[in-house]
Amino acid sequence: MHGLAIDAPSALAEEATLAALLRCCVREVAGPRGLVWPAPPYLLLRVADRLLRARTYGGAALRFDGPLERLQDGAWRPLTTDELVGLVEADLQGHNAEFADQVAASKEAVAAILRARAAAEPPADPWLASEQALVYGHPFHPSPKARGGDGWLRYAPETHAEFPVQLLGVREDVLAEEGDVSALDGMGRAPDGYRLLPAHPWQLDLLRPAFGAELIDLGPGPVVSPTSSVRTVYAPDSAVCLKFSLNVRITNCVRKNAWYELAGAVELSSRLKPIFAEISAKHPATRWLPEPGYRSAALGTHLHEGLGVIVRQSPWAACAPGVTPVLAGALALDAQAREPLAWWSAYVSAVALPVVELYFAHGVVLEPHLQNVLVGQDAAGLPAQAVFRDLEGTKLVAGRHDLDGLHPEVARALTYDAERGWTRVVYCLLVNHLTEIAAAVAGHDGGLLRALWRIARDLLAKLAADLGWPLPLSDLLAGAPLPAKANLGVRWARAADRTAGYVPIANPLA
Ligand SMILES: Nc1ncnc2c1ncn2[C@@H]1O[C@H](COP(=O)(O)OP(=O)(O)OP(=O)(O)O)[C@@H](O)[C@H]1O
Ligand SMILES: [Mg+2]
Image (cartoon, helix red, strand yellow):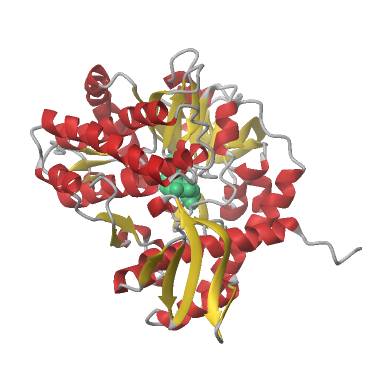
């Protein structure tokens, strides 16, 4: 039967790629123009004058049942990714010669991941397994798995890759570091006068630094496992995560630690310590992952940034004994909520309340999207803790913190104005995160989905009362539209992720 068997990975990759692109079209292309019509059980939309339809459930998460279709010559026919890419290209202003290739590359990557994953052994560590579960990636991105360069499969979390970091030695007079990086010194032995700098082997291939007296190659070091962001790895023997630079575009960004972000992470780690202590006193489920230090080589900006590594605490160290951290993004795929109302209530209390309180009471903007939050589950599987991570996306609200004494570039990079910060919080927490978890918990039960949002509303309203009904939170609870990040728009414009706009979507809290 050679050649006749359906290649399941290719079919699944096509299905997932088409679904993600259609979600972007509903949200960013047809939605803002009023060209989306609910016609239960279908959702109809028009893109480039073509009528499309899909059976949907899960509210704003837009989960699909059955085929996605286009109307042609009086009949509904199956829609393909290539056709939808053509419609998007015809509909959007301007021209982007890379777009179709990026979508196709992402689809190919998903198929390659599925093939390799079928033959791979998942890790015994349940947290790590959850980090490696995001096979299809961001559900509202046109090319969620596009990854630059060759050989990426060797370093892919979804295929349960494991590999040794490469140990470099940096001569002490050209060492660049701040904060506590003692975890790095335990990863091997450096000759006298040198300090250890672990490097991601993929990044070394990309950077090809010149070795000499100042920078030496000490060979392979401890074996590590990639987490969901690809460039952050877990080093189990040292009980830390290492956040590397990777000069590769992963979704919207080339994943390079800028020098001011290296310094900013350490700065935030010390500033947030007392703030999180206060937050945990009021919301005892709150945990976070400090990034106590970074190390690099002061051999010009290119290498300083390219080799810069941030040390991050392991989530196991953040959780109480008996509590298992699980990536929120994995729960969005399979929530396993045996008692949905109680589970959701615990989830929203643990995840949402501290985020909102941090914004209003402390002027701190977390980036609590599905990939930046771990939920600690107790022995019964109930959400008992929420662990927030990724200080690169964590910002301080302008005017609420004394940033005198910081390098102006460091201060600039860790500051948002109040409005931008609130938009970011609402997008990450509600649109990116809770919408997906609610859809996973409710499945096809629309009544349950509405009940979940009533619970979220009541919990947030109680906090709002406590905080004196701050205006943006009151607006939100009164039903102001939610801001959804325009991932298709920013890719189409070939713009930097930080310039991404937002499109308004219906608010399920009202
Ligand atoms: N729902 C989601 N929301 C945001 N990112 C997602 C989602 N699903 C998958 N991802 C992926 O997770 C990564 C998130 O990027 P982010 O900038 O938070 O991570 P990072 O800063 O590179 O690393 P780390 O999170 O370890 O600090 C991207 O690769 C993105 O494609
Ligand atoms: Mg992240």
